[in-house]
Image (cartoon, rainbow over all chains, first blue to last red; front, side):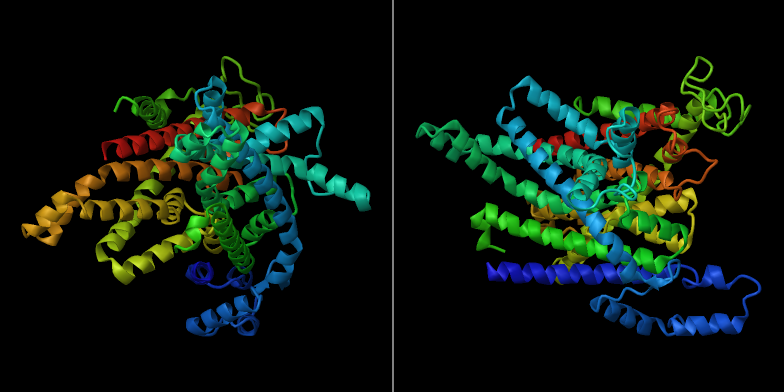
Length: 320
Length: 267
């Protein structure tokens, strides 16, 4: 168990290192430095441009800059956001909790919904309804998240006025308990959008896994012993969970990409929106910071999924 | 083969519509005949998909948009497949630490949200031309192909006919070209459809953010962008390009699934 954990942690560190290096390489491949747009205007004296570049260390050799960048990331310093005039980490610290809230709700809703739906579909694979919902799931997962947001969420919300369509809180709205309800009300549509697509993907995998387990020996043996059908289904589900849990880590990056667009549509004050604004402002230290932080998020979530797999299938604990 | 017929037909039909756009489209996609009187018209016989805020014909824009969206996705698939199979085959053939290093690299790039990586490129390089966009889409989408190709190459290398050929003294290069590469074809077909199904929404999403195909050139994503803020009053601006996206992605998803199933069955 400890050995498995240690090797997973080592892998995670390697992944983060590659991500940071990729980001640095992409930043440096870009023409000039983060200042080039602002400082290469006519009228900016070359001396002050050079001075500013020196202050931010953009004049140093590349290896030096890379090591400083790497060292900064380890200390939680992601550089300077030129469009905000603040450290990148300060900007991200403000918006990260909001994105985390959105992603966590979407993951919870999508995973629970998808696992339950898929398990039922797999257990009752012969029923017409199961087959029809499976086909529906295939259609839903083929729709990009931002279109789901526009068509299935924003349209009805505008037409019937059931949910607020933008932001995270009512301005000058209630505080305390009522304030939490207010946030949940705002959260409903963006979270539902992401959860719907996630649930469709999860359900299809869960269905396949459940169908495979349904015909396993231990299920037939259990039934022959006269175990209650509910109990059999529960045991089967636990065995069919492993591939789906592993899948979560794989879907997460694309879900984060979807969240960027969904945040933009619902004006959710999270990382995605910040990053889109940063791209428009050519503020690539901020964009790179966002990429690094979200990749670390993915890595951590994958680790958690790995641990969950070990919980679901004790046989894997002794292997690597 | 019969099972893959209809998704394949759908994709071919979409591609044909894109190629034939200049002949099929009733109007010039960028013509603005009457930006005041004709703007945001609901679908009529003259404009079956309605018109956009600049009075342009949406049907013509969706048809020409298919050229951008499908073309970019196709080019991205070619790039992703080339890089991915090179990485996958190198890992499988070299083995040992090269294999371990390449696969760690693949896993690491997989952990980076692709859209965010694209945002980083756009932030650094500014707005991209369509071919460059396709290139970068492909350069960020090779990982699945690499994994599939590595796995299949390893399996093929261990099969009796390849082992036999090797025992007979077939040189490595010929062994690769005559005995392994043909066996990879079904895997490459599956990988291509998976890459295609991933590239279409990414391009649409980027264009929807205003960072992909730049207006006035239409793409499915940036037509939807025109509906921003008026979705109830201009549903046709969302629904018709979406139909294009969903049909293309759905067909690719079904095709990938059935190709994968066929592959598993012939094994």
